[in-house]
Length: 363
Ligand SMILES: *Cc1c(COP(=O)(O)O)cnc(C)c1O
Image (tube, rainbow, N blue to C red):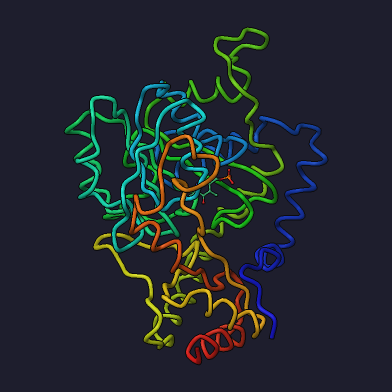
């Protein structure tokens, strides 16, 4: 049986009629950028997260760099972020000229709150908490530290749509929550898309200015902005997916529950849970000391897997200028060598999952 790491087509076919109806509606409307679908999606997604405002953008990376731009975080400023994140989190910081300051993750692959304080200097302006793989980070101590040191708090929720900490949605703990709607994300569009959520009216207003060439009023440009608008067609399709997101998340949780129940292999470490946090399983990430052998073994059985992520940002060529070397972040580097995302997608059949479980148990 051939199994891909993800099956985005299944997410489409489940709601095919609704998606096709909405796509046609937008195509026939004659209005394709910043119209009623974007406004409606912004209202619905704000309501979903419990934030006051949502602003649709062109991607998750745009949400991140525009968040720091609007917060006036720039050259000479430092932003604390976990070392084991996707490189886009770090680019959101460095596009603004600011410096990322890495901390090691905790046992749950999230930012380790106990390691933040020692990294705070008089140049520290913000903390970026990434809710990696879909589990909410341990936010109570992070929020407390940001209050104590008067730091801005930005959340990277590109993988955590709907995940909560102590009943509160990720994205609503700090100044700005940044979301991606890249097709493979839990709330995926059919192309690129992103958004920020915030409770701060001024931030929402500024974000709308930045996404549209720095202009509020046509041809009157206040700041050097960018073109980062969420398309009408994507917003419309996202509204369809959002209306089913809770069901889609429930399905992923059922798949995860079966993995937890039936995966038994001493060589493999399953995900662990932070007290108070919920998980939406953007990825189901296992750890294995013989990871590369496991990949080859699963490959032979035609089971596709992905490493999130094989090269930590501090060792990426793009960040050589920061001057880090191998050994600077042992936990982060170890995870890069041991983590593996096994298939986790909506529409996985029981037969497929049985095949995956038997294969892994037989390693
Ligand atoms: C996907 C992702 C991003 C970037 O989102 P895009 O929409 O692809 O630009 C940022 N951070 C994390 C953690 C991601 O998984």
